Length: 292
Image (cartoon, rainbow, N blue to C red):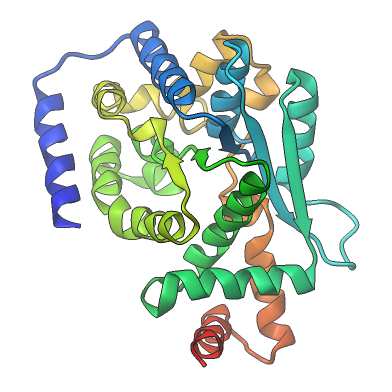
């Protein structure tokens, strides 16, 4: 963890001596990074939510004839008429742009088993509502990918930090510094979880938005170009829209993986179903159960 923080601090020092990257240069670096990783790691899956990050990845890969399977995960119980948002938008985008697409919508019994599997991999140290909500989506996507013989999964991790995608960026006095703070804290918040899942499943995560050169150039961009007209990640949305992605997809509002897929709602419902008021108590009970 300390090595990661020192690495990010070194990047921050490097950025301090650089001038602002143009939008055209940033677009080229973004495209080159995604395409290079996609070409080098085949067969390839993309963790696809229909948000701007994963849609940008899939769109660029498709435009340059690099094969991949877009994989989307959701939860729906028998009381819900509407499918999860991620499934609905992912289907539309995949159909419109002819992505090779695979999805799975979990029911109550299936999602509880998935949560238990995720808890067993992450252990008590990493088990919390966010890690299980996000990690279960990742584990399910890995499982679907491996059914297709895929061991490489690309995702949008890092985009929120380098392009100021969270509510806390909107609220920050110094947006750029908040981006750096988020990058520093990613190891404990995201990377430990993803590394544990990758190790347990013999999968490799590809994270183009955490490419060193892309981080450096994106962090030269002033904050007013990242949060603009009410949108976070504004410059990324502009870039992919100018490359041909429809505005409704490029400017789709952000939803975190655990909300767009409804795994967080599933945690809530399972907690109550099992007699717990809070998700954390239900998860602690799951930890004890998988340790028995």
